[in-house]
Length: 154
Picture 1 (tube, one colour):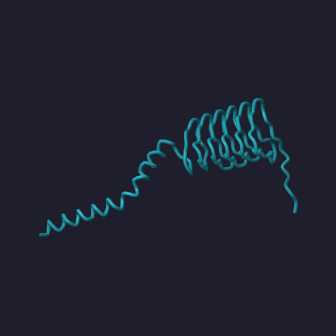
Picture 2 (cartoon, rainbow, N blue to C red; picture 1 turned 45 degrees about the vertical axis):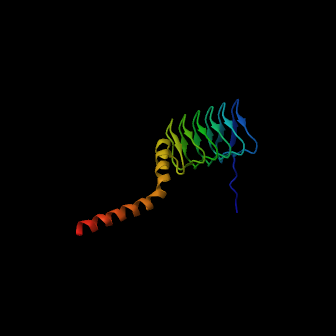
Picture 3 (cartoon, rainbow, N blue to C red; picture 1 turned 60 degrees about the vertical axis):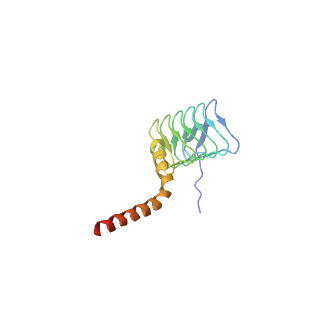
């Protein structure tokens, strides 16, 4: 069986910091590029043909699948996963453990899996915390409704 070698390059520009046990895959063709001033923490995986923008910050256990791009000044906090061929726009921030299956607009702040707008996320969390109370409240309302129905038929 013929192998398909990775024949591209990895380009690391000036003032880049790369933490321990980080893996940067060479491009299948062309280049994987880490731009000036990027800071990459320990245990980060950068796939083939990716681009990390200027002054981007990638925290521990971030994973970027092949051919994805993060813009300038992007912050990817711990355990963020970027799907293949995804673009994260300049100045975007992704909260911990966010899973990113679609492009992210410049300046967006996202959280969750799949990642969505941070304000909507916190509103959903507030509702989610109250879901456990619903069965008890429904039973109480059903009891009151039964009492009202009984009193109107008497």
